[in-house]
Length: 106
Image 1 (cartoon, rainbow, N blue to C red):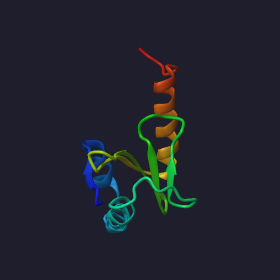
Image 2 (image 1 turned 180 degrees about the horizontal axis):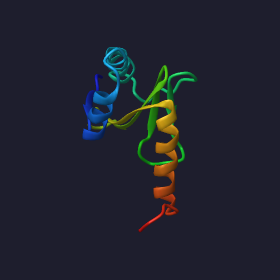
Image 3 (image 1 turned 45 degrees about the horizontal axis):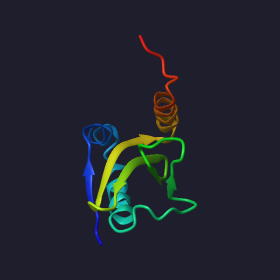
């Protein structure tokens, strides 16, 4: 079964901000790894995130990380963010804090 891959607005913005040299490699890896087996966890590429409900998975592509959710019944992969390794650490801290209710509010 082939999954439909959908990019949310933030992911499209992230992709636009990445140097054009890296974009084809990222898009190729997303297509190759997420089109047919987006939930197949591996030691090097796909990781199930347990510290948060969404995003549920992370795909590693060199120095970049793709965060995504999977709807098995709807055969849909939703790409939420595409970040550098450094940015991804901050992103994960932020969403973990938000879900645990420890995030700062103004």
